[in-house]
Length: 155
Image (cartoon, rainbow, N blue to C red; front, top):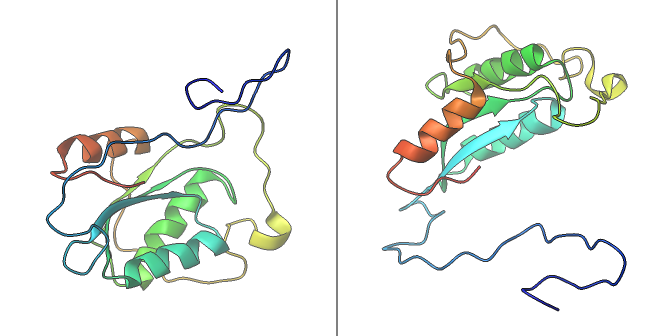
């Protein structure tokens, strides 16, 4: 082994999906009621992500700074509308939503419309949102939050 990567002769080895980061001193553990973890939720709000967003909002240990959307379970515009409607239904119109990419950089989009329906959330009907997506692309929105927030932000 060299530099923490497995060596393979003649074949490419898979790279690890994590990298060690140095420990940073903290006055209180992050992810507690006293010091909530700043978090951006990046998702394609369908049935599974609707639940994840709701659970994230219910936890006082998390400080949801924003939701960004990508095309996946449905078209990106449906996913953005779903995020806005979910936040409205959860009483959190104050959380900004930014729309991102319509699909993956490589490969094709695979939708499970038989499970998620055309709009991404099955037969679930949510009231219209009062908020609109921010006029900033999701990548720019994430970069701005990461740059401007006084603490590290999880995505």
